[in-house]
Length: 92
Length: 507
Image (cartoon, rainbow over the protein chains, first blue to last red):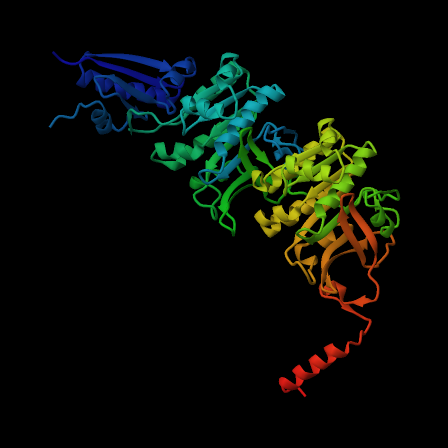
């Protein structure tokens, strides 16, 4: 059975980098994880408390809570190889 | 007309004095220093006192230590940060390093950070923000230029929100660049430097220096900084100032014969230095001065470094004075300390506090030499000048003693800078005369008054110091070994000398 991914994407409102990050992430998830994920998008301007709890400073930030290890990927996710590396989705 | 900026009290004792009011209100002030200079304590104290003393709530943004560590460390100063958090007066923005792995994949900014600061400010309705220390933020990210740009955005937002902010930054070394990563490029209006270095005797000295406050005044000299149980304390360097008032009224020294030499005693508001070698009676003179004032009903301060209270009481009893009674009823404020107990700046503060609290007009310190032993020359000079200036301002009459190392012979007083700092100088010394050690007293100077210049003989008896009369018919007294001017012809002695001289081939 494949592992389920638990992801959170922190963005700041409707900025272009927020939109880019979401777009990059969704296309990647569609191709690589095929539905085996749970994604929550958090707007820190509306929910600063959640950013405080998770100690988020930079936006956009993608966090992977599961599978372990917990990891954060900072940026608009335009560097696809880095994102795959961060999500442990690089296969040899 | 120049725009003047308002300032808010810093909550750091002494700082507002050198900052001419405090931290610039509604602006960002950079505090830079190497590690161990007190940046975190300064930041926390600024917030804590802001809340507890000036009713201004605060947000602490921490990039280095965890909030739990900061709360624990501040308990050491008696500051209950948890209580303030519960009362919604203090909020943390925890930006301390996260344990989880982190990587960068594309463009980003610190939007979430800014949102969290704003959220915290709104939550506790803060007027003050402390950010400690931004240098740690740079270590978390790859591109310093992004962080600089983002921090600039943060400071601009804080200014817009009219927040008074202090932002600390790490200085790589004690000299050279103000901060790592060029933080001063975007917070350059107000810069405070904290120093921590070794003085030439190998003692660690911390100081604070205001590099600039744009559009606003401040002292430019470094001021000593000491961390104690109460937090950070800054000791502005005393400024020597001309005495405001001259007094024409004289007060008694308590030694009858000495008053006569001084043409009625010492001027009110003057400082008198009693200098002499060990055992010449400096403490007795001090006791005379204090007891006389206490009997007149004046409040006095008596700082004694050489003897314990019990020794001093016994000593006083032996002259028939009940010093203990006056100490107990509060008219004599006796301070017996090891001189090592306080640094010079702290001592000055302790004395200032006692004098103003108790409205003291008569003060004595026995002896300065105890302080001179442990302070650097510069510190000692500052202490004496600072003490002198302060007591004069308080219309306080002061007596200081100083121990000279030489038992006999000439001692230079000017070496220790004491002579210019004091108004009157009284010399006590031993002289060898006629095969005996005798005691000599002389008034070297009395500023603004005539005085008798005779060299007087005195004794210390069960009644204290007693002036006997002038040495007459002798010369070279001040060198310590006097010669009588009378030529006593002793045949036997002359014969003996003559023989010796022949023997030695001098004749």
